[in-house]
Image 1 (tube, rainbow, N blue to C red):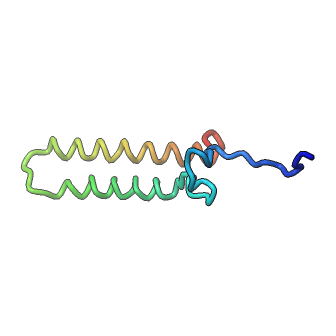
Image 2 (cartoon, helix red, strand yellow):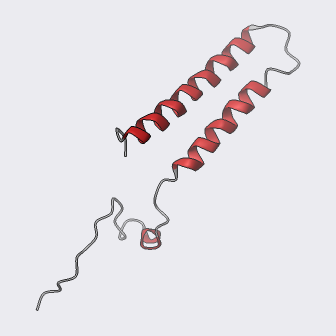
Image 3 (cartoon, helix red, strand yellow):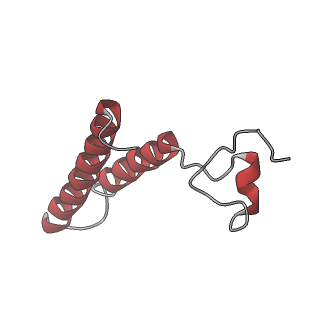
Length: 84
């Protein structure tokens, strides 16, 4: 007789990733947001250094701003349900 138990589908197959059975294969977006904020603080902290010119500062601000835009876009789109 066939099993009447409902099989749950997850994006990760346990044959490919054995730790998926314990739920360790999900992406934790809060961790990525925290890492992004750390990168922004690190990039802006590098502006205080031993360089003389201002070109380096503009590049650091540009990359920190780009990182902030990506984090904010991802956060807003996940809240609105546009991203999973």
